[in-house]
Image 1 (cartoon, rainbow, N blue to C red):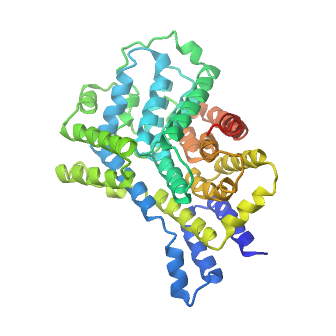
Image 2: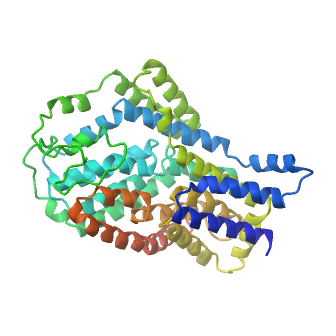
Length: 460
């Protein structure tokens, strides 16, 4: 067996092991890069081989991942996230039909400004499921709107998925369009959310109004979970969003006042997020460096509100992504990427090969880490894109990114599992089965739809 084939088998084995065992995929990738590199790399000694292995570590991507999640952790600590959630909820007034869309948009905003997709789902799903129980909204509808919202914002230039995808594309020297990637992903998730909304009872919600004007209910308060929703908890059958909230009447005035007031720290955080967005979108500034700069300034101004934020950085995700990219860089060094590209080119039908790549991304991501898939599959598609095939790089990369992310609604993914965990106990099994049907339908529908729209016409 050739070295190239061995490296691909090791990559597949890593995904399989990380799926069935509680071990970080990035840690496995670093171990594999070390063992395989020492074994097959050319070099005068072990030290020279080790230097080659470390040369593949993505320092720029590390800064992006750590920086944006650090800034988002500060935004959670000082209540900016709570303010955004409550402001959006209050905006719907008594229109029950708009509540799922508020959850969609809030989750989109959270991931778009740098929240890891599972983290935003973990924050919003207890709140959303609380509102679903309070206003008799189908929990499957609410859960899918939250997951789709997280995916819709996942490819903004400031987000984790966007940072990974745009970084890999730039490193490979391929043409990229970060703004188009974000907009197409948002519109695709918006489109499937419209289907979800009308498929699971949204039409009946449009004519209904709540008993109040959209303020958080005084019983089984879903809004009370927002400030402490750092980890998901199964929602009791009564519809409470947290296991420690009693069903006695609670005066919401102090909670509402604390969550809806714009104090100095929240205003400065919102300004910092705006600076990050403008700098990334219009001045091509490095997202990670700007995010860390804003986070450091906020910490200096208000150390108390930023306390513990460093510990809340998504270190498992940072390790996962950096490990995968490090291993893929080793594969590139030993010639696997070039070899695989030439093998894909032998299919003889570039459009068919592109469709197969998208199907692989969707199928594997339904069970494995989406961040890991993006870090591994996009580089593997690079030789195919640079081999003179009549397939647009921007179109295929965008199709692959969407195909690999919308399947997060599978209950085997982190986002899907979080929604199941927060569903009312008496509806949990129904939500699980519904997410399974929808998630695996996306494995078939998303690659085919994105291929037809983005790849076949050749306009990107």
